[in-house]
Amino acid sequence: MLEILKKLVAQTSLVLSEHQLQQLVAYVQLLDKWNSAYNLTSVRDPEEMLVKHIMDSLVVAPFVTGKRIIDVGTGPGLPGIPLAIALPDKQFYLLDSLGKRIRFLNHVKLQLKLQNFEAIQSRVEDHQPETGYDAVLSRAFASMTDMVNWCQHLPAVDGQFLAMKGALAQEEIAALPNFVKVVGSHPLQVPTLNAERYLVVLEKV
Image 1: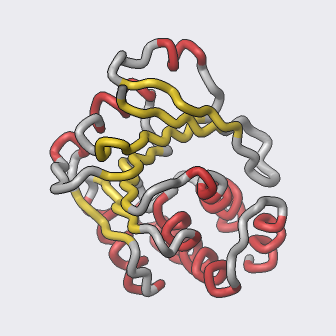
Image 2: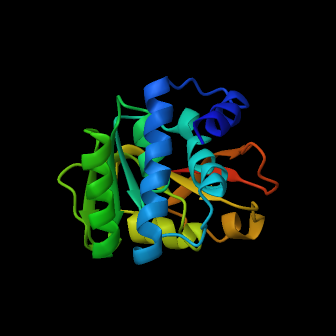
Image 3: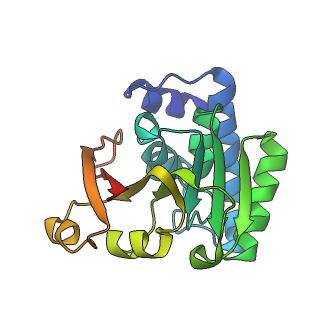
C-alpha cells in the first residue's frame, strides 16, 4: 500500500515525508480494521480508500490557510486526519455527533501519535467555540447553503468556509444566503479518480 500511495502522491504537488506516508497507510489500515464492526465508510477495499479517501482529502491541502481548522461532519476523520498528517503545523478540530466515530478518531490519535487534532462530539449547531476558526471545512454537507447556515457561528472574523464538492452546480452557488460570498472556486485533480471535484471558498460578507 505504501508504494501505491507514493505513486499517487507523486502525481500531485504535495511533498510528504516517509513518516507521513506511513501514517496515512496506518490510518487506512485502522479504518479498514474498524470498518467491519463500526461501518465507518461504504468503501471496503483499502487500496480504493487510498484514492477515494486519502487522495481525495489531500488535494485540498494547498488551499487550507490559517492555524485553526474545523472539519464539520468529519465521519471517520475525512478530510481532517489526512490533512492533520500532511499539515503538522496546523491544529485540526474534527466534529461529529456520533460516539462510535469519535471513539475511532481518538483511537487513531493514540495509535498514530498525532498531537495536532482534537475530536469533538457535538452537533454542529450546538458547538460553541471560545474563539472562531480560521477555516470551516466540509466534505460531506448536502448543500453549501446548509453548510453556511449551520456553521455561520464557527469562523473567525476573517475566517473562510471551504466546501468540498463533486460537480460544481451554479444553481447551488446562486442559492447561497446573502451573508456569504464566493471568493474562489478550484477544480481539484484526484489522481486516478475519474470524477469531478471542486473546492469552493466562501467568506462572510
